[in-house]
Image 1: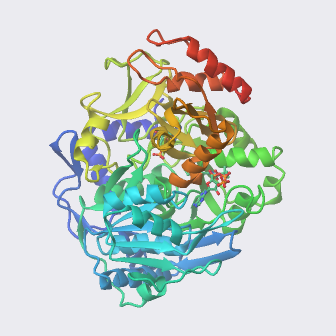
Image 2: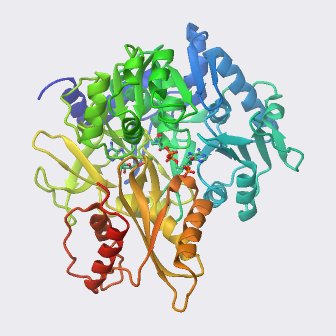
Image 3: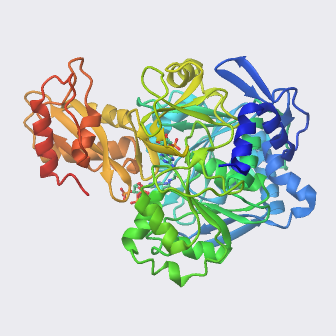
Length: 631
Ligand code: COA
Ligand code: AMP
């Protein structure tokens, strides 16, 4: 193979400073950087040290100054409220500048944190950009998380202000946010100086409380200009699941982030300014940060903020309606959204109802894409369907078919090639490179390219030990995979206790913590097991304390409700089994992976270190009673 991709990849590894220095020319810098890459104290690297810039300026003001102020920046399309609203670059900038002015009035300063706990409404995007405008650091919390998860994030980020809304709207119900936020604040020792509420007409809240103000009050301010921040200053924190119940606060810098996103919009997604880009994700996830908000706006595209689902809002034609109505060129979504469509519309009849001629490429990410889903999408849409692999930590793709550079042949099930900047290797537990086709630990040789996380908030030590200690000189992705004979990368699943439910990254450890807090539970284990739509769902096994004689059915109902209440509905925790003992190794490690294999009906070997192999028979029996395997 020889072509644009290979040239770019080789150059990015051989001359990273030159490669990313050229990419940085697309960004407006207030002050030029001193060096493209600084190896501070490996594994700590800094990109564009000495440079000064502003993310909001690059995403909004510069396009207006370049004469594109009338171009549509944002389309809010909300089937759940029957609303479509368009904002030009000038309109969006003016709203953002006033919001930034309002934050200033509330005392927010550079470096202060702002927690944004919001549904998919324009005010959420405005708040993110306003935070960037004045150099504060936002931390968006996904609306599907319950009070306890929100509280963990508030406690760690210590925000000066929390911006939220009166409610979120799901397919079948309205979700009042105030009880969730009040519940979270009751659990926190940190108290913000104000909570700002967007009043939605679907559900109004009483804003008479202390330190509670309305969005309209916030917006009643003089517009604020873009302030100068350092390339290495944090733009945002985004909490993501780790293996324990404590989420990890991924810190994203300013300069490297903009350079990486700008490069990716053109070279991975093949977008041109003025075209319509749609990431059907949520601003609570990294995909939403990078490709609903910052990437498309930076590149002068029109971005879509979609408050709905792929099915049920109102039917499996929802995505095709949006593409046809707004002329979407590139759609980015999770495979699960497609599996849900396929389940309800297996023949693709809704697809044929719409004019999808604007659609050039579909990108999938967030979880492993099974070949069937990819082939279904390809057959029915008639455009290249590109699976690409990334993580909250990296903020953009690690492995992809860089359509903007050169579209390589697609192999369903593989995310194609390492993206320029990422030198990927597959190692065994001893650190040896495994042969082609053999699955091992996927790692990235340092330095990571620009845009990747620079540390974990309040936790430099965890940053080093979690990601850089296993293999010195490498970033540990915690994904297992292999590279085939053609150099294609295949990502097969996590090597830790993180699971992926409908494209949402969740910690089984956090769920186990909740189950263990129930007074009747002695021990528990949660595994991610196969689900035909959501890819994986959590399945709990619990051992009751000696002497517990309450109805098992009641305890199960309580456990399911507890996870929903403490973590949120997004965990999709709906099944739990009571067993006498859990399968463990002699050293006490619960064999969650073996439980998963039994549930999924995939071959497994009884680990040599198992304490008592007979326990697996009880687990197997239970799973059969529950209808596993489910495919
Ligand atoms: N606020 C409150 N609750 C939320 C929520 C939010 N923002 N988002 C989801 N929930 C709730 C849902 O209502 C659901 O509740 P239920 O158990 O009462 O039904 C639960 O959390 C699970 O939600 P979800 O995973 O969205 O499942 P679903 O059955 O409602 O929808 C899909 C199924 C496949 C349509 C949906 O999962 C989907 O579109 N997934 C794509 C995910 C995605 O884009 N991920 C981003 C990574 S790129
Ligand atoms: P998140 O941090 O929420 O983006 O989740 C990252 C994890 O999702 C990765 O570590 C993978 O396990 C999984 N993932 C994301 N995209 C893909 C993909 N295209 N193929 C396989 N797994 C993926």
